[in-house]
Length: 302
Image (cartoon, rainbow, N blue to C red; front, side, top):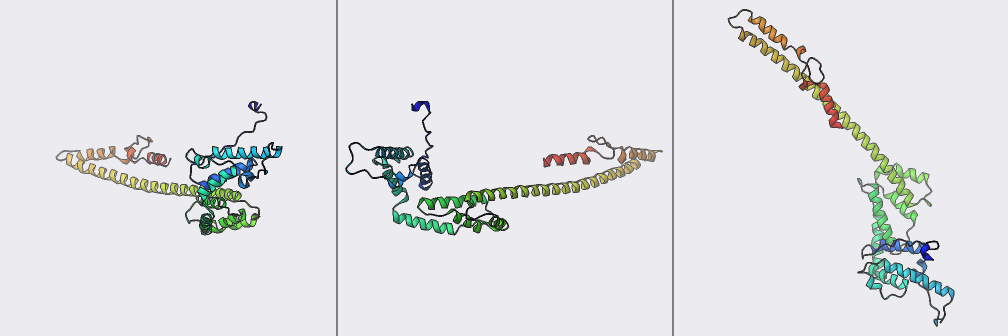
């Protein structure tokens, strides 16, 4: 009747081990075993009755069944290159210990590695320009490794370490957390959420301030350029008008009324006779149009 799905239990997603990062894989497997009520068998094994009964009782059959299930999970979690190492194991405890011995080492090696991790944890300090997300990832990685080697480090110790080792940018945040939270029950996940949320708010505020400063600088630069363009436009028109006077004298050599034609030429090129093709206003040409330059500046900002 398993096919109808009424009494069937969905199988957990099994993490695959390929020979790297055993401490992470073993932690995931341990959690999975606990969810299936199998971890006690994997960690401590079980004893068969001596002599082995011809017809095992109900309890022994259930224990054997659960152990076989745990062994199957371990086998399914190993890459094909790793599986031969535990192929001869007859119990989940035996298979687990084989992998633990090979990838964690014996007791002496474990002790040395644990001492190194303890030192690394004690020396953890957040960099001045380091993001809190990156720092918390480093803390999490070391804590996971320590626990995989059997270190019983409490949640309170981890939270306290993080609060003590944050950089000076968090000097105002740390006292607020310590005063408002119960440190004996405040979890690392809660601390992580609070710190990440605060960092996100600070980053958004900083981005808005930088954007506003950029806009103010851009507008100031634009006004300065407009002033320069306006002055050069005025000077250019004056020089051009001056050249009109000179040309009036040149064309009028030996003829009457030449000076009058010079004034007429100057009048036609008077400042007010120029019309901008962009805004249709009089007094300047399109090249010096303030409205056109302003719209172009806004487009650049966008």
